[in-house]
Length: 464
Image (cartoon, rainbow, N blue to C red; front, top):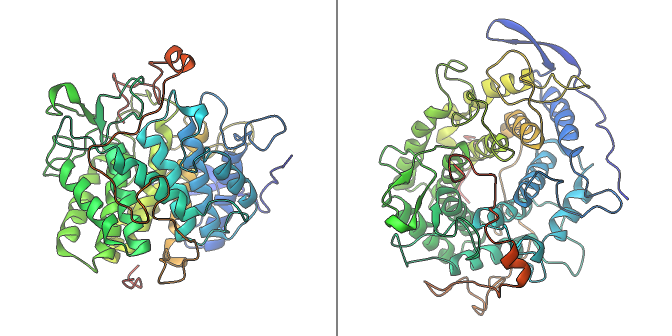
């Protein structure tokens, strides 16, 4: 049995000046790297107390109910970034064990225990985690285990094989298996996740095939109502109407995943002007998530659910991914730094002020624009606060590596497929599995709690 130790230095409760008012929360001086690391340590510890997979008799790599499988992968990805920013290796063994426990028998993040609920978006969040492990040179898995890079490649290959042209002219379905609700829905997070993964693999490996898929997936979505000319990204669309009518919910992680993919493509192409224009457009498109009425346009808000207090168990974590990918973008595409960094700064101030609840006085809430804890708590709340606070260390850490700039994770381009050594797949093919009686009994279980019908859902950087 593994035990989590408490952080060496707990962020003390203190007065944080925000908006001219003194508010109580975790002490955070954003001009002091040690203060940021101390605050991150406190928040990370609070998040990891929700994880029970390191306790005797509990499934390794899973969060307890009501959290879905994908959020554990997102959490481990966040903790890899925690190590990257702070150098604190306290949780590394737990992270490695969790990531490897859920790879499934084919080392592709398709574990049999998730076939009733796993969607393309769920699978890709685990791929994001292992991709970060490769890019940050996180300690390699034990001998005999798949490499971080090969796991990400396996997910890419399988998702590319699911590219579907039966409706909407292409794209990935939300769900993987025919018996799950959402199989006939194409959403932005699944397709944005595939785009981002392809772009990151292109940059890391230098293999043009990945870049071609990134281009293909991006070109597809901008031809749908899901991605407007003003860089508004909507949740998804039904295949029944050929994806002509968008569900117009907007979520932070949708634009975040496209921003991260575009930044990797800008870097991979050594500053291609088309990708620069797209990044600039996305930065403008993020304005909706920094509304004037909440935080004066300087604080990140999950506008689809926070003000109305309708967020489910998934959605409080979405800001974590936007903050994470905004920070990474300032390294990959340094021209964005002056726009992004002030927003991370003020959002971190607000988040620290919200981390003042619970019995310990350090539990994080959701509404960063409020001066007092909002009474909400959970894995997502902790993850989002951790992400935006530690993102303010981005100028203090080295950029993500590639295979040509110090990356040590060895890949397997044919992982998860039978492509024979190259990450190429047949278009229009479909990955399916035999449906058992147990699967039939579980048909209709969705991959996430449904909201509104369906899941709404540094200038020093050199080119590599």
